[in-house]
Image (tube, rainbow, N blue to C red; front, side):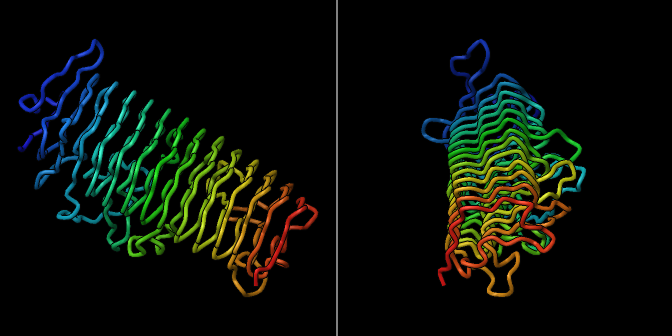
Length: 420
């Protein structure tokens, strides 16, 4: 069946849909069973719930599909439930880079599964996206959104160099407020899995929860919290982050990370997450401040464990609690610390491989630095009660940059042991 979706409340789907038990507030539109080919944007207006058939419904991009996304939400109080969206990535491998610095992804990336802009009270549950060339879900300036038990597989496209261009997963941007992404499963995604992003001049994303999601084989980050405040990242798990290596964009500076940070991020917590086999870092804290990193585990890393950074000019790396985490098998150090009034305590940094060369940032368990992107000398930090083991860790478990005086920080009660 070929459907020509047009503007309005799924107007051109009238012959294929029928209304079930309409409520005073929301119409229910039941999709027919089977595979439906969609040629242009299906526009969903306000107060609508779109459901898949009990026996299964697949909405598939028709050949020569034209539009920003297969489903475009343009009204408040919309629910999308229990159907599959199948893209055309396998036959339409158009390569695209990142948008210009002043354009959000919603105004740039095409071939998305679901797109919503400037709406509210949106519910997306039980959907399965596969072979999507853009983003499975792209939400821009949306208020009050819940994405639950969504599956994304084999999605995302490439840039002109043949590497990932961040696409394929779930993106919330431009000040999306009051969001939850829970219980989702993302596999074989070329770009980021679940992430937030806003232009520097736009409102930050706020009051979010990213929890109990699973990630397997992603070319970029599993989770990225970008330009946000008040976000909790809890009990997520994943494996093979930064794989396959052909999808990574190391040349473009996009080192894969299990949990990444960008922009200005505060009042946020990353807790209870478990990742292994990472072709990059465990947790990157570029822009993170006034928050907590607690009880996370990362095993088998090909880069640093946890790294602080201060690229965004509106923040300093300060008041960060890094407690009760496990970093097992980092290629270089366990944690790089800059800034002030941070706490690094009760962590287990074990099996650190470390650079065998002269003492320095790549051969320390914990390294207190002078700067990252901007000056941020390590001062008034507390490093205590950590267990640090690995190559040369008896003598290199806590090192400081030459300009950082020992008296500037409190270093005490750490257990340091060399494995070889």
